[in-house]
Amino acid sequence: TSVCAVYGAVAFACMEFTNWFFVPYTMMSQIGLDDGGARYTAVGVLLVVSFIVCRIGICTWQGVEFSKDLADFSSADRVEWAFVLLAFSVYMAALGLSW
Image 1 (tube, rainbow, N blue to C red):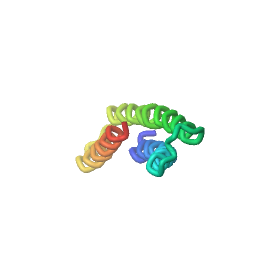
Image 2: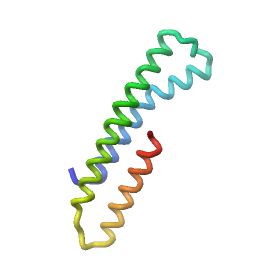
Image 3: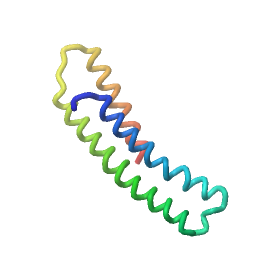
C-alpha cells in the first residue's frame, strides 16, 4: 500500500479488537467471577486466540510490510523522511508494547 497510515490503522484496529476480550476478562477477575466457569473460560480462550491472531500475527505482518515499503521508499525531501521515520518509530513502539 505504501502509505504509513494504513499500517497503523490496521494494527491499532487489531489491538482494540483484543481489548474487547481483555477488558471483560480483567473485570470478571476483579469482581470475583474468575471461578473457572464457562463464561470466564470462554472469554479467556477468546482473549488468547484474538491476541495470537491479531497482535502477534496481523500486527507483526503489518510491521514487516511497513519495513519492506520503508526499504523501497525514496525521497529527496528531508521533511518527508522525517515524517515517515516518525510514523515508523511510533508504529514499532506500539507494536513492541502490544506484545
